[in-house]
Length: 358
Image (cartoon, rainbow, N blue to C red; front, side):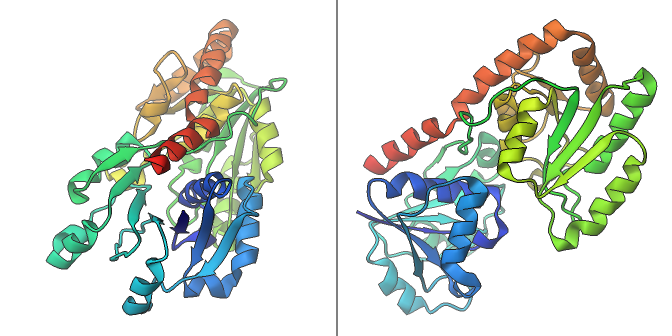
């Protein structure tokens, strides 16, 4: 059996790429797996990009072969049809577009709510029905996409390294993890800084500190500096582009996890589509206090494995309650760690292998 996997955005190091490459790692232990590079990605450097991704996501990809493919913008349709015939299965992380595939079986992966351009023309509908299955990363994504992508679908939650992240000696840290994306500011770090400052001033939280970690590209540095200015002299620490081993340590040491992506938004695409960082935090025994929108509601059981908030008063109140009641924090911390196991990498591998064997 031969499998091809394609994401047009392998150079972005995002959650979708992590998903696809984990599938590649799992399948390459048993069958031939090709990671497909369109012309743009191939020019960047296929082997180097694969190795960088393997290090970033802590994956073993040595058995995965890099292959240049006639895919993506400007590719030749006839070359693509001939090229894909060699594959028993094609796994495609869509950017919202679709193409006709000649592989024996075809699976689309959707990471976020998509409008569904394929359904707006006869040719688009024809191409879409050439695909056998859609895998969504959450029920939230599925609910907000399926009417526009009317083919058979299932949900397989993203893989999380729950076994690698362990509770350590806890410190009085409130942690939030998310890209410092200066263009969209979608992780709402500024909002979290203001909330922490309010809590700190009102309740004299002299021993507590806020810790913000996430990737930051060159274009995000102005936003990062803006956040540093907003934090001022308050105990707020920043960790741009933190090594994975250090992030694991930070998860282990932290006590409370904040997440605010989607606050004040009505557009589903601006909400957290799943919430990998929330699960990672829970694996380390960090109690999540996260917004009750998007995929977060599928991760956190209110009052049992964490708290879901709908306004800033609730964010402050739930946080302060945990700070002042160790027994409550301890109970929820243990429940959060247990809940995180259902999103573990081994569970994911079992579902992928079961799907392929069918």
